Length: 306
Image (tube, rainbow, N blue to C red; front, side, top):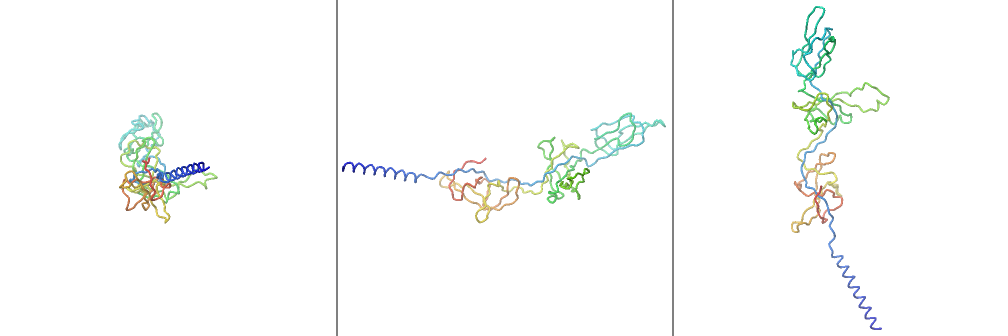
């Protein structure tokens, strides 16, 4: 009986030793670090833009007409041809007095439309001359955006025909009244008003043609060479202070990182980025891109952000 008691005590002792050792081992293991993604803090140019559409036009559009009812005997030009002022456009024949006369260009430019047909009578508009080297955009902007624009704002002009090429324009005119729609419907009162705008284009508009539809981005706000982060990288602490979290490496233990909160002030906001400023910011700092999963002082493992 004593022997059985001794054996039972030994078994219990061993169990306590094993259990205690397991408990100590489990509690001595380091807590797994949370893995966070970081991205290097960088500077960029930020813009807020107002979108609109427009049509490419010429500053110089001249209609050449003749109402003599004389026969169009000869044509000297075709659509797309450049003419100088006083160049002959067509020859007319007056049968009554057997005489010839000529319709001349009143300005220099490109023939962009021609109603004159050989053998027909001259009666009305015959030619349209436009300066294809001096272009503008006539666009329209929504009523809600009207108070956010003013003359001399920069405008980025693009078209499907020119791909990703951007033409720098300048907002020169804003109509004082809304565009009047000739077709009135029962729902016209609910239709939002639009206002006509005019954008001056640079001298080099290679690729743009009169009549093309263009996409306009009017730059309403702009900040160049500023620090910025995605909205989700910004944190508001308990005191209401805007912060970003930095994954700061331990100078003694390489590869060991701790979350540090850096106070910032915010500025211009775009669709995806927000401007930040602060005395402690520097290019290349490892910013935690999803700070909602960590708190300042927490040890983290770092993996490169996208």
